[in-house]
Length: 278
Image 1 (tube, rainbow, N blue to C red):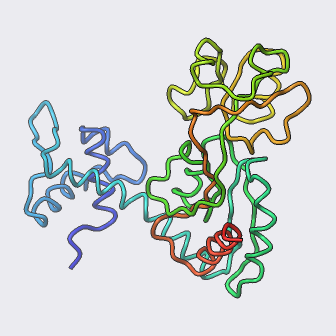
Image 2 (cartoon, rainbow, N blue to C red):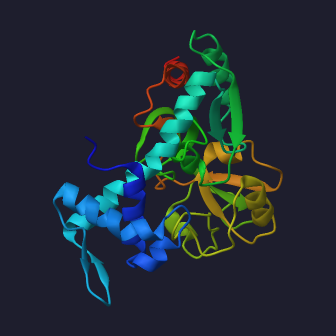
């Protein structure tokens, strides 16, 4: 016998997030008459108290807090599981998300090597913003992604490093540091740097989502930025890239969800890794 059904878990999470039975019942697909009864039934079946209730408040118990943490993950995983099952059944294309211009010229080689594998499928290329490619993986919109480490969060993902490169300062040609062979981060401490969507404490200047916008602002002297070399290669006219010796390396990785072992996804990762070894 299942200790907890999906509907019951959804009801519990609604109450736990709202800490109010009335507000929880106002959510879509929540039946108010059954809500309190369902929570009592779950507590009885699990033999734990999930909420401390009074006439004026609803508070999670330690058991309720633990169930909320893991229950959210379980509910989030269900749509992905269903989507993956449908893809497997209908032989849907493999969805591969990249940043425009952010493949360091690796993409064509990866696709050519993948096409030779017996498990290969058609590949749909998805283009994303600066920082949301991991979201595409976690929520099932994509099966694999090219990511930049350490900038992209690899938590919950399995990743293979394909390319390691240095980071460079992107400067206008007339900048005081543009003629240097290399610089340090301290040399840029007084400069205005861009902010990237979804990256906390990334800079003190305007928000930038793509390389084209960065180049335009650097060219007119509004910002300078430290980025992986491949994002700005070849350097546009009037733009200079100077190595930043203490910025640390950047890695381009191919990633998938940690527990996604489907044959056609594994084949793509294997194909990409084989190019790294050549």
